[in-house]
Amino acid sequence: MNVKKIMIIGTGGTIAGTGNGASALTEYRAGSIGVEELIQAVPTLERYGPFESIQFSNIDSSEMSPYRWVRLALLINDIAKRDDIGGIVITHGTDTMEETAYFLHLTVDVDIPVVMTGSMRPATALSADGPVNLLQAVQVARSESAKGQGVLVVMNGYIDSAREVAKLHTTEVGTFGNAQLGHMGCVQNGKVYLYYAPCRTHTKDSEFILREEVELPSVGIVNLYGGMDTEILTMVARQSQGLIVGGFGHGTLPQGVRDTLKKITIPKVRSSRIGNGIVSSNSSDIKEGLIVSDSLSPVKARILLMLALQRERSREDLERIFARY
Image (tube, rainbow, N blue to C red; front, side, top):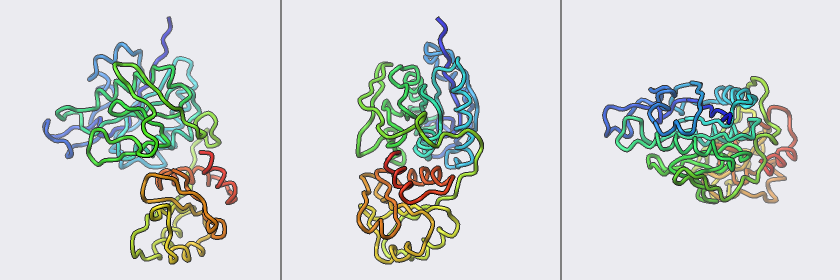
């Protein structure tokens, strides 16, 4: 039987980090170990082979950027064309994992499993979580049930969809998930259990699949706070082609903010700084030219707007996009 390969792409992050001793849990050098060394550190991976690996980057994920996202998506699209590849695993830092995952969810032309994983503790730490996370990510990538599910994040034994997943704690090992919809599934004793599938458009059905290098439009984010000088909105808007406003609660905007936004003519999305729940449209949004983010956090709303603004869009078309993705 000809078993297809799992491609493992290394981008760096804590999973590839080293610290000064086993007790160094928060002070370490991310991206110090190559992806081949990560693979070799998990002997039980062998039974899920064969593997191939690519070192895309070896950085702290706080250095991730749209420039790198575009090139990573193009790399994955090239790999997915190969008949000998059955799944893709990406090792990544946790700080921007939710953003990279959602970007890829919208831009890669795949139906094979694409699984992201990382760790909260460096490779040199006592009870490092990287090896088991990598093992379980590979187990998910080998699972038939993971096909066609878009980009998945596997951390701490749980499986999450790229659209909903978020980092919920600064240092806790079990930090990835979402408070609103719960985990998509789990991995236990090497077996994959999935309980729901993504309903919003992604991967092969997306209108944003990348075929060539592009420079994405600049989209700024302003999260509101009590007594904020609204001139900040104007300053960010001057340097942007789109604007995400993280409002209070249900995306609530004070009158001064609304008055300032009326003067800003670039596309504007009303989101919430809360991080959970839906921001739904109201009668004022249409009059004031605002689009609502649905359940997308400000950082994910930014990604969707960046992709949408690769060409000129009407407000109605942007509303369609935020309702669909």
